[in-house]
Image 1 (tube, rainbow, N blue to C red):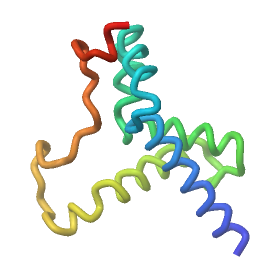
Image 2 (cartoon, helix red, strand yellow):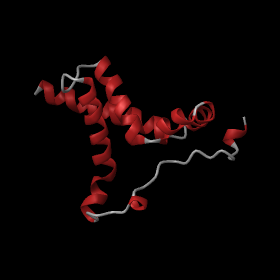
Image 3 (spheres, helix red, strand yellow):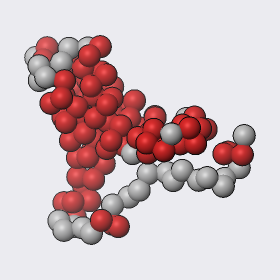
Length: 116
């Protein structure tokens, strides 16, 4: 029972960190500044699937590893994020095209936030 509790806590922490980092308005300005600083950091902080891998690695490093392997923990974190985000849509439309997946918030280079 303790392992299940640890897994649920781990999962919520990974999902929370990922959603706050990639989608919240709270971190919109830092995301845009990272995008200006480095294109790949901007992409990483705007992609929930990408960021959840690294968030799962960090959470597993700080907490107990779920699989005993950090790489597999990262894959598990990405898989959970994908399932929670897109799972219901896949059940409704089993063969979606790429443009049918919801996109994260765009990194607007000409927005008012990025004129700092």
